[in-house]
Length: 279
Image 1 (spheres, rainbow, N blue to C red):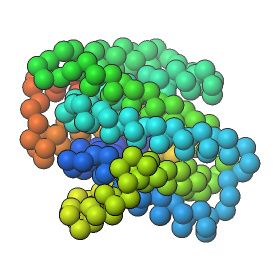
Image 2 (image 1 turned 135 degrees about the vertical axis):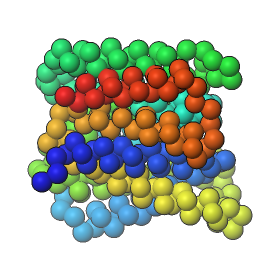
Image 3 (image 1 turned 90 degrees about the vertical axis):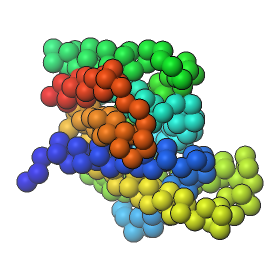
Image 4 (image 1 turned 90 degrees about the horizontal axis):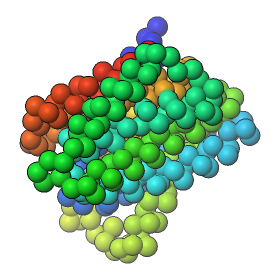
């Protein structure tokens, strides 16, 4: 039987992939809206056929669903302000620290010496990534850190919620992502329904890639929620955030972003710290 850690590493690759798809589109708010649309449609079907989670999970479902919407908005903002190869590692690398601390406070998970080492490595890597470099603004770093905070918040909520769902990880995931119907609503309120629908005709390739990216995102986080039933929150989050290495490679190879030696070393340090947190 495959260990949950190996499957979470696969989810990390999926996560870096859909984020690269989002960043690669010029209009990231529009792209995120279409991603959310595909996620919401699939989730609507899933909630109609899956059993309901136990009642103890519902406060977490509502809280997580709303935090996910805040995460989407923060993510779009961070990608507007910074390169994928920098914004992604800062956002993803900062979350294991907060998840580990949150899990210790709210779920009484232990923090060992290796975890402390992991926190130090991740912190050092993030500091290296966040140091001012040419073309990178303080606002870009702040937006990425805000994204990391929302990631940590919904991860801790879901770690608690899925364990209270009565073993219904699938339906728990579906009900969370049902809240993604709010993203099209936000887009329509901000830009109007015509601009969203016209994009099908004017940018069909972007719409299709966004719809596909949404499905990849749903699968990636569905795996994480499943793993949260068996593994410690900090460990699951940390292993997922090794995706910063995948993100660096994707940014360099496919998005043609510059990845200097400092960024490369910093990403490896963050990944090493994430592995320590996952032990």
